[in-house]
Image 1 (cartoon, rainbow, N blue to C red):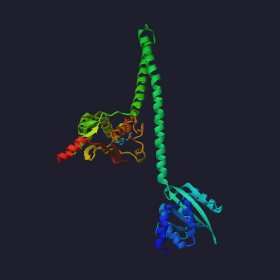
Image 2 (cartoon, protein in one colour):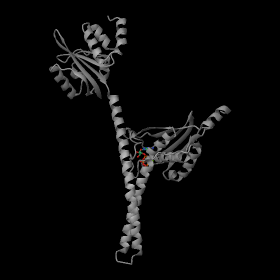
Image 3 (cartoon, helix red, strand yellow):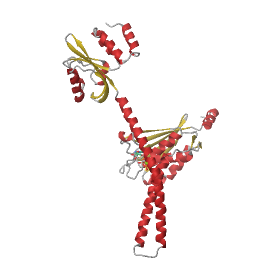
Image 4 (cartoon, protein in one colour):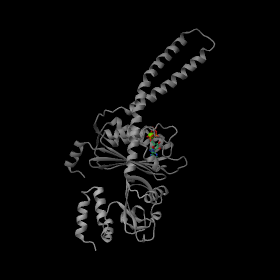
Length: 393
Ligand SMILES: Nc1ncnc2c1ncn2[C@@H]1O[C@H](COP(=O)(O)OP(=O)(O)OP(=O)(O)O)[C@@H](O)[C@H]1O
Ligand SMILES: [Mg+2]
């Protein structure tokens, strides 16, 4: 049986040596299969050992885990086909085995039965009675998904920059068109009556309206990208929420939404910009109002304010239609909207304002289970200190 000292020694060097040295080491201990197999169960990569007939001779714990192979079940008599479900990768492996070619650090997609991205190595060893193959693989699916996500974020950032440049360029010709349309309209006003004068005046009016729409789209877009400069002061969130609830009360009751506000006693104030924080909660509440399917009856929006030192935590919760997992990743992206009338800029703006406040925003949602936005904003320090000193409960 394998000695503990031997395992310790192996584990102590395994972190310091590189893949090639480990491979060399593994080759050296190949003679003593008992020792070898025991050791392989400790290895952080999946390992399958198989013969020329593709029959599995050994699979370590990690391999069984990645391939979701029942650990109780014996792998004796099983072949590579029982483990690797992806036909493409299997064919590739057969090809490599037939040609006695190694695989060095390649990335492949396998079905395990879940789709996984793995980094693979294949080594062949000539034995007295034929070849034996060692397949090692590392599950790198998580890392790959992270990479894809980051790439998407970079793409969005560069697209937004490009669009900002474009919007900026559009502003000048728009201003020039505006001046010339005004001039035309003035000339037309002063011109003597003629048959199509009324129609022309109407057409000019339409052009001016459309132009001002274009102008406000460009301006809103540029405003949403501009860094905001906050005027940080002591702000009562309770006050902001109370004002907004009464401001939206008509809309809420028209939509038959029951709204409730719960504020923890002695809630400290926050350090923030009143004007911008109002925008944040107005948009979150608007989204909540818009979250209900037409046929839903028991519509409720709950607002909860509580202390979570050193933050104030604000929950805006609705029991509306919820957000699908695919959409959850996109809701903070500029211009993502599922509403026919939405611009998709609300949550982008909210996120930006909260980040500028050194706060945080989280969302918990699922289709049919409603949505909860949790906003964290830093407490106003002077207030907190006073509150703690006074020892009030
Ligand atoms: N409370 C909510 N319940 C369900 N979906 C929501 C909720 N809040 C946001 N969403 C989803 O996130 C998307 C983006 O929201 P966001 O506020 O950024 O834009 P919008 O509401 O569509 O348009 P607007 O720019 O007018 O606010 C929405 O279109 C909706 O799909
Ligand atoms: Mg919105």
